[in-house]
Amino acid sequence: MGSDGKIKGNVDSDLVLKSMIEFPHYNKAIIISNDGDFYSLVQYLYNHKKLEIVLSPNKKYCSSLLHEAARGNIHFMNTARQELEYN
Image (cartoon, rainbow, N blue to C red; front, side, top):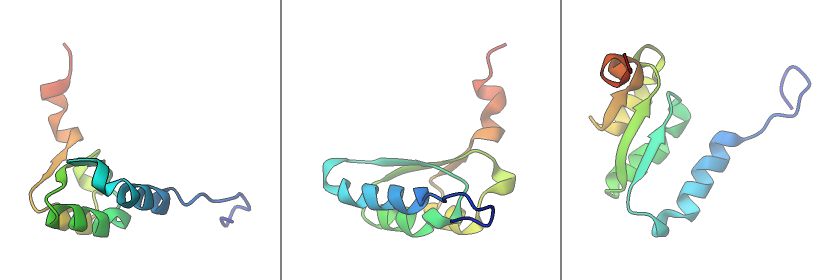
């Protein structure tokens, strides 16, 4: 339970667990997150040549651990806005 009294989900750990259960069934993974909680997963995927890319919503708020684990396989969606935006 969270500090506000509401039931807290373990979404991060559920996503990591599901990624590992399904590991043999996919070729590449795309991780969309700023969260350093995914550091170990990203590192494992990279080391096993299953990391396609990490897409971080915002460079300013991206965990340095996540950035490090992606080893250059990271793109920041906020910096690509001009390229992606429809005028």
